[in-house]
Length: 172
Image (tube, rainbow, N blue to C red; front, side):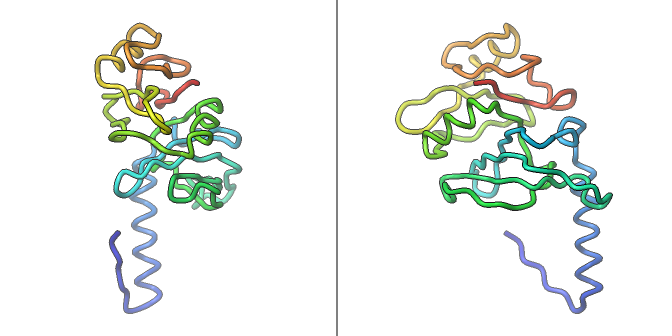
């Protein structure tokens, strides 16, 4: 985490404006289309996987890419309410997958997937959490539309992992 200090309120406000513009510039169409009722997955600092439920959006133009969510992780299994900038959302997840992760205590095994590059898809892992399948399983899920070797959660909708077009998502 980077901490910045400012000499004035105006300087802080200007830096916040710049940061919001930069974040807004990273938003893809599928992220901008996130709506209340959808479940999401984000990967934050140190690879922490965060699961969220979108509760509502905002009407104010300067908040158009924020969603009010309840988010969960192994660090905060009881969940917490807060704003999420949609540029930080890695993919949509199905309600079924969300509930499976709740039952697993929000625990993920292995390294997080590289959603932006479409290199991996999730799979069932051993133990309490859910693990990630390798490239072979991911390729099978994307190209054949079914669960490949080790892939238990095929991608929802368009089975190809196309973050630019529809955004990655997982089906339970």
